[in-house]
Amino acid sequence: MSLERADAPDISEQGLDPHRLFPADATSRKIATELYATVKDLPIVSPHGHTDPRWYAENEAFPDPAQLFIVPDHYVFRMLFSQGIDLSQLGVPRIDGGLSETDSRKIWRTFAENFHLFRATPSRMWLEHSFQEVFGWTKRISAQTADEAYDHIADCLTRPEFRPRALFERFNIEVIATTESPLDDLKWHRQIRDSGWKGRVVTAYRPDAVVDPEFEGFSANVEKFGELAGEDTTSWQGYLNAHRVRRAYFKSFGATSSDHGHATARTENLPAADAEALFQKALKGNCSPEEADAFRGHMLTEMARMSLEDGLVLQIHPGSYRNHSSGIMAAHGRDKGFDIPTQTSYVKALKPLLDAVGLEKDLSIILFTLDETAYSRELAPLAGVYPTLKLGPAWWFYDSPEGMRRYRELTTETAGFYNTVGFNDDTRAFCSIPARHDVARRVDCAYLASLVTSGRLDEDEAYEVAHDLTYRLAKQAYRL
Image (cartoon, rainbow, N blue to C red):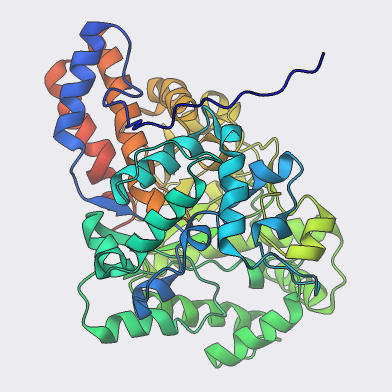
């Protein structure tokens, strides 16, 4: 006898539980609810993310629900792909010349028919928050409601109040950072600035394409880099000067940070002659994997020295095996849901950088991880003593209620709250930004309530910490 999955027939109004993510016991829940009430409406500070600056520059209507919620969001399409739904069926563009679905209603129906796959995931919580709080849609998404939901959201998207700038203001975003390559001309940021709109959208300097010898087209990228900077990037000093020039250009468009997505946390502090020799090998495409990793590691130390000169905050995002599927990389390109966490070490890996600049009080380095086992063993002890180091929030696969809770439990006892940097939403999915920040605020308030009820934190202090975790620490850490 075969058993088929039964869809719940009830498609009545669902609504969001106002006490979601709060403790079950009455005393802790009351404290968490009262803490949350003081921070839920604070402005959003989004110092690290990947929304498209073109949205804010052109302020055109989003095309349709599928293009807004499904096609650009790897959190959504990777889950569907895991259940045998091809990315091309979901409209994810191909770079190999193959065809992808262009009927957005059909893409949406596929998503709706499989919405049960997201049960109990952070994506489900973000999506339902967006549907209800942004678009006023409170029925559960399903095969039965697919077309009605699509039509409702599509109608909203035709209205001026659902254009990017209006949503930016409605979401109460005080500042948002996008992330661009040094090869980007930042024309959209220029258009935003020249438009006179008051929304604060800044860039961040992401130099992976010109510091990673294994990045596709590295040599050509470095050549273009030199042209943009007006420097001879065939020489080591010209290459370093080009970074200084481009960093200054990014600062002129509001950048306060650089961002580095390396495979490992390895750093090096090589003699100049050795660094130059590695650079020349990289330009010729002759670096071994070990040499490429050493060059990336040395460039983190060079970037830290430049941060001492220009004040940019240095973010290190190691530990992702990027583009794990060669087939998906060939068909669809980078960032298509196949970046997978790896085990990452920090104590030995960061020592060359920390020996060089780790005691500099004017330098700010924010460490992220995709390896939870490093929180209490390595990251919290490091950030708990080195004045340059702060801990980034639970990130990517741990940007979830359970991941956030574990992060606080594993880091607070050693690093405290004030060697962390609040919350980053790190998203391309614009409408999920308030949802993600809401989850973080709820989880932090629930954790603080547990500290109060267990006698580890006075209640008046909990209110101050809640405000700091929600707002002040991110502004301070990112110099915003």
